[in-house]
Image 1 (cartoon, helix red, strand yellow):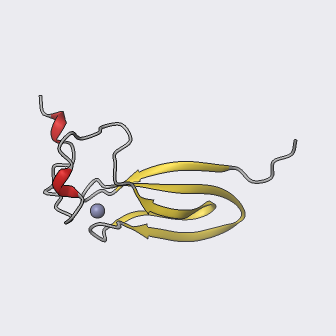
Image 2 (cartoon, rainbow, N blue to C red):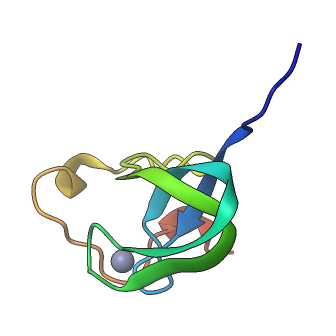
Length: 90
Ligand SMILES: [Zn+2]
């Protein structure tokens, strides 16, 4: 079985609001440049230049590891108040 193209799903979190984004990483034979902004606050989340390119960029509404119990008011309006991991307090 020959596989020319490797596809990997990676996750980037916004440096500003910590919203997680899921993206498909593929390998390219030529160097390419690109970038993605946060779907929530518009901050630059990731930029690249090289043989790895990213596509199918989408925000994740549910955090993969830390599932918040009180997610009710997050669905309507995007009200991230800078504390995306409230369950983390000691
Ligand atoms: Zn953001």
